[in-house]
Length: 492
Image (cartoon, rainbow, N blue to C red; front, side, top):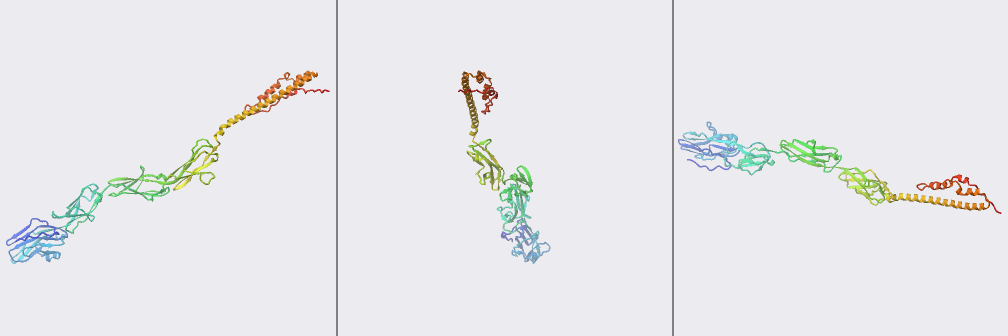
């Protein structure tokens, strides 16, 4: 007689092979499965029915074909085994918390009043763990990978699997977990289990490799970098495997290596673009940063817009220039001997300039980090240019007037000489009528005298300086020496 058993509970894993049917004269034994694959730690039921035409005295299971020890009496089974069938027809038993040591072939044995029987072959129990297998532990980002939940024996095709990554449950419910395009987020520890069982496979780590991400450059300074400071530039990049070479460049020139580049006593010429290159076995990436070094004003200079002579009434610009970072925000102008400024801005304009604007000027340049004065420049304001244009005319007029005065003096002198001659002739005529010697009057007659007198008068005229200066005339004394003293006769 055969007994149909109810299906095993969910916590059982059974692989049904060809059922075992063993019979002899007067008895038969039937197994629902001759091979059973059970997960470690699970509970397994081995279903069995038997029939005997004899009176059954004892029915039990044994793990050896020849020793015939009852499993209920074996200490390693006694607390975990239970005969669940009826002794007459059902020979099923249940084993809980199966272990690898439970992997055996089990035999059903019964004793009747006539004989003893042990079936053979029996039911083979295989206890298995779960193991995650993959094509490799390392996969490059963007490639595909397949993970498989493996066991040492074949579980039923209806088993439902559960996948975990870093203890988080995934959605996949099949034996194989396929990742078609791996991302770095897929890296981690993967494990699997079978639904309805506590057993979980040991974790298997999946490594995802990728070249460096774009590096991140950070500056040790809080943001403001001033000449003389010390600065650390730090480069970091995420990659797998980790970056093994960091290189530093200023513009296109290599300046250092290592993830930290240090600049001590920084100068303004350290300003510029710095690039960090991060490299590993799979590739490299660059990142750039602008370093801006601040400094107070320097090379301060003042200049005057005019390139020539500055005269009263002109307009003049004084310009102050400076090199600084940040740019100068205050320009101040100072004149010598004055404590307060006379103007502001990089251009100081003076309109309608006067002579009292003459002097030395300097400018002061200021920014957030300091100040500096320029050297002084001299502003020289001359008289109005119309005065300079009238000067030659005045000189000419003055010289002309002096010349006219000299001519007038000479003319007056000549006129007086002529008047004197006329009086002399009148006197001579009177003496001639009185019988005075004609020689005396002849001597007084200019017409009878030597031409030296006229030469003398000509000399007066020619001795006038061409520029209007006059030389005092010197008369030739011989003229007067030849003139006899007049003799006057007194009349009674």
